[in-house]
Image (cartoon, rainbow, N blue to C red; front, side, top):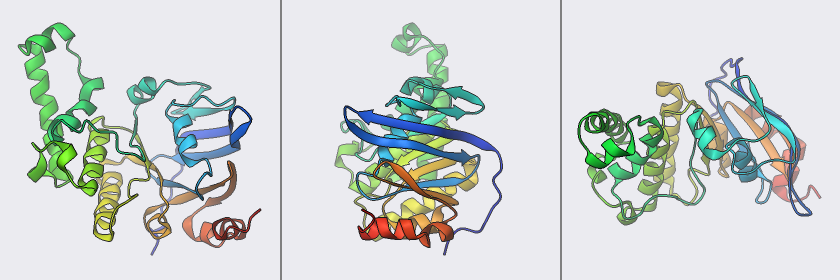
Length: 263
């Protein structure tokens, strides 16, 4: 069952006629869509459709040759990843990108770096303002650990954790930045059914309780149709569908692409 229909009117981010090429290979061609404040927006498509490339354009890893992205009313042609993070865009990756030798707590703490104000001198001394600031940041991180129900592994090196818990820690690190827009690149890839159900619940809770706008890439169509408010569909770098889940799953171009008969 899809999510209840809700009205989202304020556009948080819009993608305008984005085209991206690597040499002679076109990864994205004239893509336009928007992400509205408070919604869960899914990007789907077969392998090689350009989904991760699109996320990389949004948070500044790739710079498109054509088009622009407007975020919170500001139109931009290029943005660096650290600028995107500073402006409230957080990201998880298809392949887990954690510090495997560090604990769950310390990995999530790294998500607070942009919000730390004290200089390197005080941080090195771990005294005075830096100590007080770290205490405040740790409170936020402990709340995230409780929220994600990973208290039992808070001091465990993440390299020792099962895959599903590592994905949850990566989500926690992104949440530690307190983003307005959270980009999730296949958050449920490689998970068993129980792990997928848990991650679905956390994604919905992040959206409902924190009010975080979410844009996710996901291959599991059951998950997409259940938790998304709107879905945009890419195939071979082109947009072939866009709308609420019921519209998308009945779109003949989308059906053909997933059946492998679109070309």
